[in-house]
Amino acid sequence: MSGDDKTIKILFFGDMVGKPGRFAVRDFLEQHREEYDFVIANVENASHGFGLTEKNYNDLISYGIDAMTSGNHIWDKRDVFSYIENADKLIRPVNYPDDTPGCGSRVFECGGYKIAVLNILGKVFVNIVDFQWNKILDEIKRLKEITPVVIVDFHGEATAEKVCFGRLCSELGVSAFLGTHTHVQTADEKILNGTTGYITDAGFCGAVDSVIGMDYKTSLTRFVTNIPERYEVAEDNEVQINAVEVDIDVNTGYARAIKRIFCSRNNEKEDESQ
Image 1: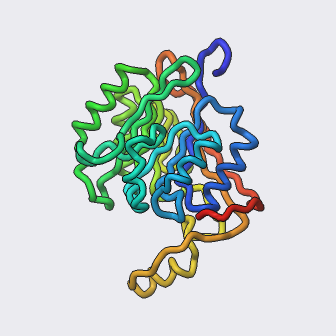
Image 2: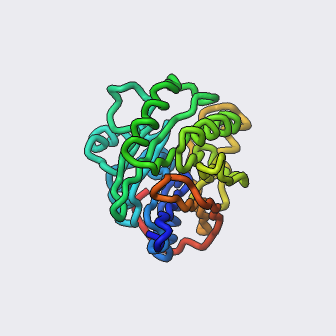
Image 3: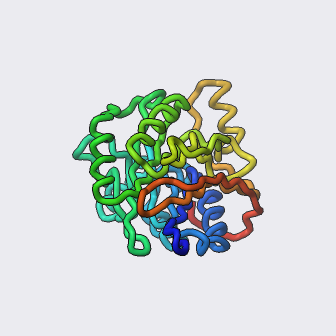
């Protein structure tokens, strides 16, 4: 927590892709974790590019991650159904049907303050859920009654959809609206309406020599032939971190500053898991 001005510094990692992404985040936090009050990461691609295993969930907690958001790929590892109900740091998109396992939002304690994290799945070009915007509005209003600090991970494909709903969220007093899913970091970070830290997409954490984290050759085959090809996570030694840090006033919930992080390094540590 920062001094007398009572701001909290939040770090948000874009989609981490497979082992290279997990290790990039791990190594970054080994050096910088103490600089942040609260750390969030999108983890829907963390286990070999698709979904999240329970082992990797626990590993990510040990790295210093306080909350994990996701998206449409969170269900790709079937064992998620065996642990998601008890995974108190994991959030799936709120606009799945009400009987879907897991939670679409959570409220966390941090230094005597509460931080709400809400995950939303976009509809344009994704089209696997009803958007249920009234339900989402009600959830934002409910969270704002608990705490002024509300962070939204909007997991969506279309830029226009993110820009539009980011502006609407700023009118509702959301503290930060952080886009995910496209894995390409956008250079449009700003504070909307004097309230909301915004970026269209936070980017991804993973192999630099890749197609948004995936192996170039398998990606090329799929695009050229239109024949289904299993994507493989790229295994380049050079990895990148795409993240966003947001300073938030804990009394008003308003963002005071937002900054993109884009850095790369050689990833030399070993691990047997995918």
